[in-house]
Length: 397
Image (tube, rainbow, N blue to C red; front, side):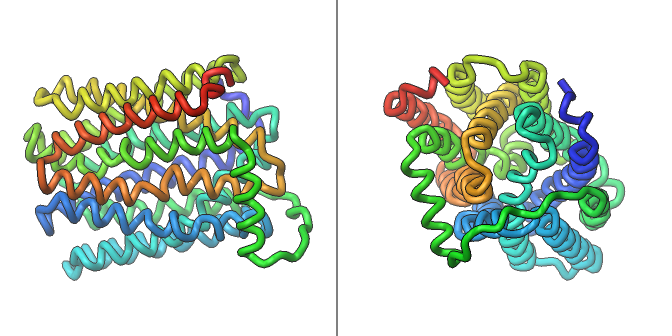
C-alpha cells in the first residue's frame, strides 16, 4: 500500500505536500465561511470559486509548456512561495478588518493564476520522483494525502474558526507552505531533456495534436471534464447546505466536508492497496455512475446523518476515477509530452470547474441548492452514459 514511500525523494515531497494541503483545506473552509458571512450569497460563493479556477482553464497549457522545458522543482518552489505570500496577505486583511468580498475575489484570482503553473509541474513531477514502476501507487498515495487533508483540514477549521478566528486559519495556511518549500529544496532532479526551440504556441499546438490523435486520451479526459463541470460544485455550496438546508452551523460544515474526505480517503487507500490491477476501465465506469447516484441522494436528503453517509459515497466515487485517469495518462504519455498532457488533465480536472461553479451558483440562487445539485447529478448521469456509449473501449482498459 505504501511502497512508493520507500523512495527517499518522493517520501520527503509527499510529507511536505501533505502538511501544506492540510493548511490549504483549513483556509478553504474559513474563506468560504467568511465570504458567506460578508455577503450571505450562494451566487458570490460561486463567483469566488469561478475566479479561483478560471485562470487554470486559460493558462494551464502555458504551464504545461513550462513544465516540459524547466526543472519542475524550481517551478514548484516559486509557486508555493507565492501561495504562502497570498495566504499571509489574506490573514492580515482579515485580522485588521479591512477585508471585503472584492479583495477575496482578487486574491482567489491570483491564486488561480499561480495554480495554472503549479499544477502541471506538480502532476508531472511524480513520475520523476517515484519512477514508472511505482507510478500507480504514487498517484494513489497523492490522492491519499489530498483526501486525508480533506478530513483533517475542515475538521480543524471547524474548531479553529471559533478559537483563533478566520485570520488565524489563514496564518496557519501560510506557515504550512514552509513544509513543502523545505522539502523541495531538499530533493534533486535531473535536468530536463533539451528540446527544439519552438515558440510556446507551437509547443501547445504540438501537445494538442498529440492528444486529439489519441482516442484513449480523449475518452479519459472527457470523463474527468464531465465530473468537474457538473459534479464537484457541491463543495462550494456546502456552507449554504450547512446553514439553510440542514441547519448545523460551522461545526456541521466541517463534518460534512470531512465526510466527503473520508470516502475519498477510503477510495484512495483501496486503490493503493490494489496495486497495478486489471479491469481498471470497468472500475472507472462503475465509479462514475455511482458518483452521480450518490450526488442525487445527497441533494434530496434533509436528514443530517443521511447527508453525511451520502457524502462519504460521493467522496469515494469521485477520487477513484480521477486517480485512474491520472495513472493511465501518465503511463501512456512520452516524457517530452507529459507536462502538456497533464496540463490538459488539469484543465479538465480544475479548469472547467469555474463554469460548473457559476452554473451551480446561478441554479442555487434561482431554485435553491437542493434543486441545483439534483440537476447537476442528473446531468452527470446522462453524460457518463453518453461517454460510455461513444467510447466502449473504456470498460476494457
